[in-house]
Image 1 (cartoon, rainbow, N blue to C red):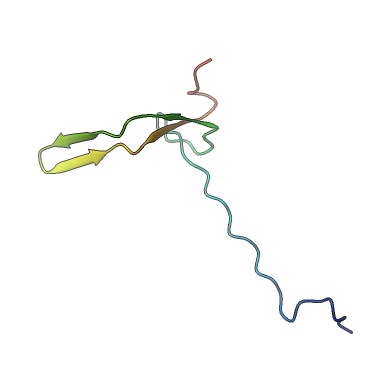
Image 2: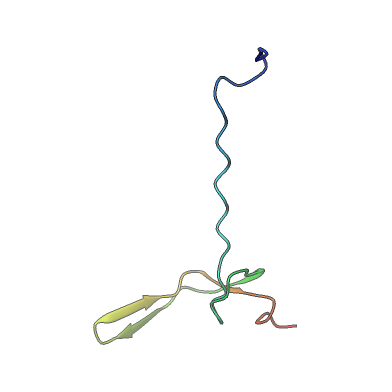
Length: 63
C-alpha cells in the first residue's frame, strides 16, 4: 500500500552528463580544460571555429 510520502508516479532518472572528449586524441574522458581565445581557421569552403576551451584526457594532459 503506497504511503502519502510516495510520489504519485515513478521519478525519471536524471539525464547522464556528457563526458567531453579530448580535443587532442578524441578519446572520451577529458579531465581538464585549457581556456583559449576563440579563433577561426578558414579553408576553401569550410570554416572551423575553436570555441573558448580545449579539453585534455589524462594521456594528453601535460605534467
